[in-house]
Amino acid sequence: MSEASHAGDRADGQSHRRFLAIAAATAAVAVLLLGLDLVWLGVVAKGLYDRALGPLLREPVHWPAALGFYGFYVGAIVATAVATARSVRVAAARGAALGLIVYASYELTNLAVIAGWPASLVPVDVAWGVALTGSVSAGGAWVKLRVMDRR
Image (cartoon, rainbow, N blue to C red; front, side, top):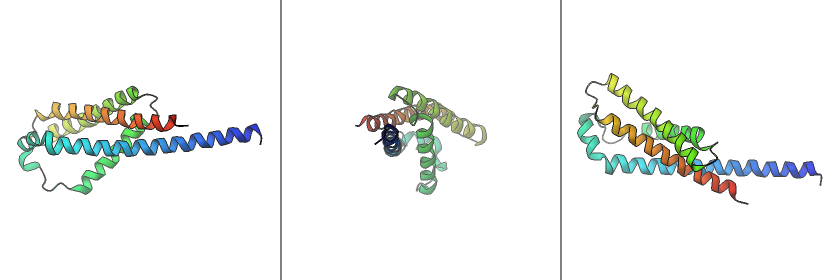
């Protein structure tokens, strides 16, 4: 077999490993994001949201819309923070920045256009978005890097 053929085999193997690493990272991001956010919204901060938003809260949750958000956000996290990160720290920093942008945009838009939107909710939600997205990005990068390092 020629050396060029061996190089092609190595490149194909690396491409396959990278695909598997991104797929595994995406699954990890999805599980972490959904799990942590549901615990936050449904347990840890439930009373805060009940008091702050009261009649604006939908019961039951409109799951198609919620799952649509999570699907888009998982894609954004993987594309922005995880896929090209060469370390967990870099992914966490990129994720935290993404969380700041996304959650601040959401909160400040609501504060600007929804009468009675509680200003006290803005810093809490933005801090949660930074912490959540940074943590989830770190977890996704950790999984990606472990898969890439397998021999």
